[in-house]
Image (cartoon, rainbow, N blue to C red):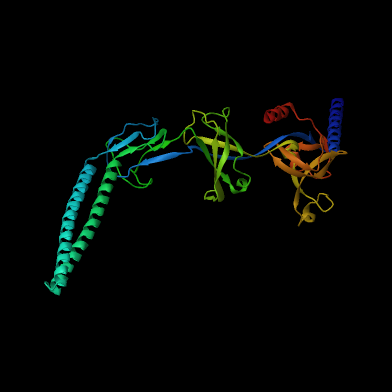
Length: 412
């Protein structure tokens, strides 16, 4: 019996201790972490993903049909402007040139013969005209002589046109023959080879199989081509500095660059239902290991503010305030717009303070109005801050060592 009484008393004491602890905690409210508003440099960025591409690249295509008989370069070779890249079988085009040349010479001989005939017809016309003036020839003879001279002149003009046509045909044949030898239009590197010796190439656009033989690029000038959402593209401007991270090189080798081109029209992403704009970033000093089509993650610095008053970004939340600045909820909040606020600790309670924010990075947000240097605001934990409202009981709780270490790493 005595043991039972002692056990009951112990349970009662334990229950009293637990009740007192809960009552004390309830009176102090939710534990929160406070952070002081401080001066720091903030840079806002727009993030996008794309790929590395040369600023200048040329698709080498055939302009005549034929079999490749020489292909003196391979993928990865460095080439110079004017260097022979491809030679296509010439026999057919040499024969066409010779035929056009012979045809031109024949028409020129015919022209010379017609010119002689024209000169003879003109002499006959002058002689007949003189005889007719002296009454030694009839008008009919004069008319016949005039007709012969006019006809000869017409034939000469027609033959001259024929000579020009055959001369053009010869030029075309010579051009086709010259196009059997394809030379590099620029200094660069063969980044893609799409044909082999012995294959037949055909003229056409780049979408036609067999028309593109190889691609040459100037690897000294590389771009990162990315797509930016319509919401972010309005913040992007030419010349803005960028940091380009290449997956293949790792995050420890960021490439510096700047924005050089912004598309004026967007492309609709059918999968996401959003509009995206292409942005080109020039890499200032490209790493020699960079290759076309490598994945690139680009951070575009859209603004940088030095000595900005800042608080942790999670400290700013949106709440509905009335005309007096008091937080309202439920039916009272209908028709009112949410405003950005931070919570401060005043007499053990949370006080909503409206603020005006500026630019932000991943960790900090600039405060333009509403706070002063050193003012402490509620910065976490997020689960408590999310449900926090004006007038709620709170008390400061120091962040644990793990959270402090995480914050230090994030700041670094």
